[in-house]
Amino acid sequence: MANRRSHKKTSRGKKVFRAILIVILILVLAIIGAAVKVYLDVSGSADNAYENVDRDNSRNIDFSQEEPFSILLLGIDSGDLGRTEQGRSDTLMVATVNPKEKKSTLVSIPRDTYVDIVGEGKQDKINHAYAFGGAAMAMDTVSEFLDIPMDHYVSINMQGIKELVDAVGGVDVNNDLEFTFDDYTYDFGKIHLNGDQALGYLRMRHDDPEGDYGRQGRQRAVVQAVVDKALSLSGATQYRSILDALEGNMKTDLSFSDMRNIAVDYRGAFSNTEQLQLQGEGFTQDGVSYQRVDENELQEVQSTLQDQLQQ
Image 1 (spheres, one colour):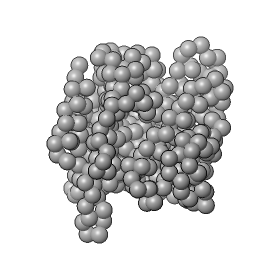
Image 2 (cartoon, helix red, strand yellow):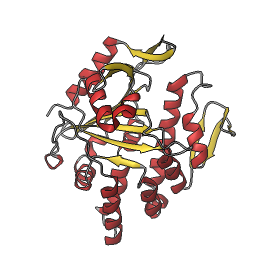
Image 3 (tube, helix red, strand yellow):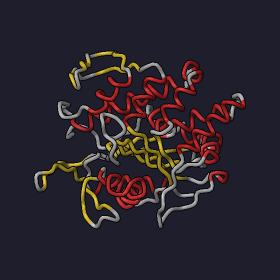
């Protein structure tokens, strides 16, 4: 919105970034003294979630050498509400991590951003890239848009989000906008959400004065609440339910070995995280609404991310 800053640094960035690597942070149980059975369960879940992508311009990151890397987080609008199609990536966030500088950067990209869809030969909303060509096309499109290499991805669908919220016993959030959506009423103030209620809370945007930016704020609040509970003692004892929620609903091209190395060797970078929010100017074309990011703002963010990925 016009009154918001285009991007800002926040102490909450560390917790938001954890959301992208939530499975990695859960997997650390296997490293810090969990029983052999836990290790095997976690390793098996990581193997089930693994899905490689076929891309011509991918880099081979050596995590054992603590090389900086980028990762794309995709929240897919399928897997629940009767939606079984490929789906679109209604949540897009990019993280760059540099362990040697002990710094990471997280960028949120509006779903309606008007970009060149790499591999389709046309311009469209950035969230359509996943619908057209899965994680590979989404990674290539975001890579070109931000002018950085896109090394890895993690995607999770709506069913996974719902089951994850239920697996941790629901979440508490501070709601700053009272509204009704999908037969649920969300009162002002602190509220408790189960999985179904969380989905409605995350999906509503048309009645929000801040539109998709307001929805992105609610997404970050729910993700933060899930992470806090998952990493608490009660969350750890429910690891099997958490893994069950992720299995079948999450995909990533990070191997279990990659996740283990990141959890052990990249922790220092998580303590100094800058959060950026790209903002666009709305316009309509052929009856469809889009967002166009200011070129100067885009170049500034591109430069920040490029510097972050330097050795």
